[in-house]
Image (tube, rainbow, N blue to C red):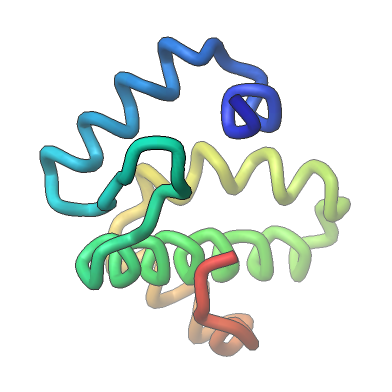
Length: 101
């Protein structure tokens, strides 16, 4: 599977994760076809990407290298409160993009 190879996980992990996302109404799957985000999945992906970009911008403003900022943001963005995220954004300004990759 391309997803498994790209993420460095097993195909079983991908199958279980995609099934969980489908049960949650975040993706739609078709046999032998791509995986498609639902409207709710797209909304969640956009919000997650925006959180990530805000944290990265804040870390870069502190002088952290891009490589480390990207890696650290992966953990921070899942635990930072809405209040702290808003403070990061006030400090750095809003991210330039808000569409999921």
